[in-house]
Image (cartoon, rainbow, N blue to C red; front, side, top):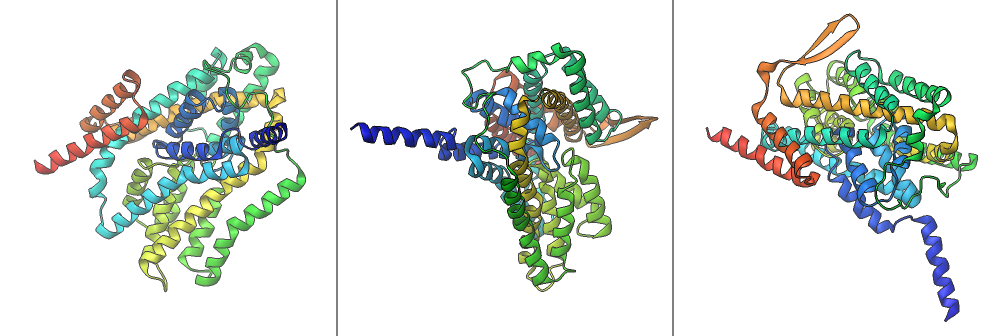
Length: 465
């Protein structure tokens, strides 16, 4: 009897090293999270914070913030990269693959369906009512994200001041996002050297009120960095990233719309520092004016669809590619061409996210004990709160008002709404969503469902009258 018991115990211990939580349980959780990833990075980070840090206690706040700070330094959608990072911490490589894939899958399918609906019927009026209710709900979700992340991350007045300064730099002075991140890292490093007491609360206080998290803040991940591992991951990732593009170029020609889209969006995947908003202006300009894949009004409608479907906002590039390939299919059926263009663009946009995390995460894990690096990342974490607040204001302005004007006075850049263009329905649904989230403490899915019904009801009543 003793031998089998020992073997079983060894097996259990070995599994525990590989998986912090059972892999099927993690997959179900990531799938549930993927259905709630509305509202851009702010809402997505809030969903993961609530599910992983507060409810399930799989990861502590300090570890979560460290991972988020690293992801903010990378090009690409930081929320998806954060999911890959946490998935890797929980279940290794397969956990990262599952988390990252599930994070974008609902959005890919939803936007494919909406793109097809747009092309088939020439309008998105059929879903306008639905999204008229979802968009105001997203405003409330983003507001909750600012409160949650700020309350648990800004543990000293100096960090609060840094968050406010970051918000002002972005919202009032249009400072480029990379400069804000670099400045925040430098300020964090200086605070550690000149006023270390300002950072001690963040290091000592994990902001966790429940039981200890499964992943302890001081535990190292079992996968150690090495040159051999780095070269293997780099080679395999580059092969996976480039092989579909090379195949399309060979089969459809170097000048086809598919090859052009694949190369263009591969490049944008490497320069999307600061989230989707930082690069979408460039994408819109090239897609509309240079390549002619779609019109300016269509780009705006695509962005609206991407903002109110689950997944990263950069998913709008899938809509752009779908329309461009449908209208220039070459020898393919237009619908087949649209599907190929959309899927290829999605592939080259998101595969680099896995490369950045799998390649860099083991090194970042080992640097958590380095005081200078930790201080710099603490500064970035504070800046993240300001970034989320800036996104919240941007989203609220463009949801609640029909017209928003850009005003410039010297170095000051402001977005001011035209108060006469307020959307009463959006304002009312936003207030209702705020009450449901902050007052009634209802779940995100419940709030989204109720707001969607409200939007459909208003659209139906308007159509009747």
